[in-house]
Image (cartoon, rainbow, N blue to C red; front, side, top):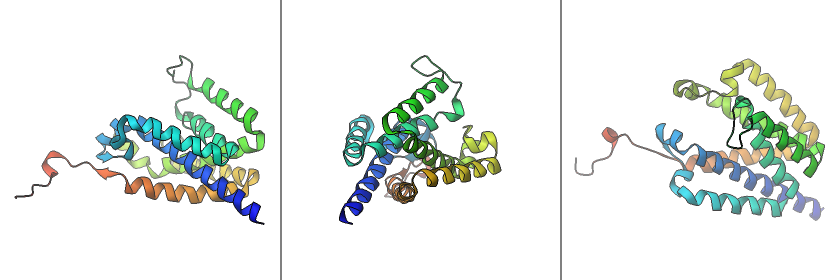
Length: 205
C-alpha cells in the first residue's frame, strides 16, 4: 500500500516538474511576445538563467519518474508544432519531420501506451490553453488550434484526446489535471503586468 502511494507521489512530482520545464521554456521563447502584451513572466525576469533552471527541473523530473518525464516533455514538443507543421525549423527540416521523430523516440523509449498518454494528455492541455487564449491571439495576429480549426471542432478534439488519455493511464491523467491547476496558479502569480509609460506610478503626484 505504501509503495503504491509512493509511486503515485513520484509520478505526480515528475508530471509537475516536467510540466514546469515545458512552461518555463515556452515562456522563454515567448518573452518578447509576452512583453508586448504587457506581461512580464518568470522567464523574462530570469533571463538567460531560464535554461539552467529548466534543465534542473527536468533532471529532477527524470529522477522522480523517467517514463512520465519523457512522455510529458517529448509530447509537449511534438504537440506544440501541430499548427505550424509545414514550417521549416532551425534544423532545416519541416516541423512535421521533427514531430514524427519525437513521436518515434517516445514510443521507443517509454512504450506505445505511455506514448499515447503523453500525446493525448499534452494535446488536451495545449488545446485547452488555445481555447482560453483564442481572443487574445486573434487580436495579436497569432494562430492557434482553436482559431485555425474552429472552437467547436477543437472542443470535440479535446474530448477525444481526454478519453484517449484516460484509456492509457487514468491516474496519470488525473494527476496531470491537478498539476495543470497548480502550475497555472504558480505561473500566474509570478507574472506581473508591465505598465505603459503613461500608466507608471509617480510617487509624488
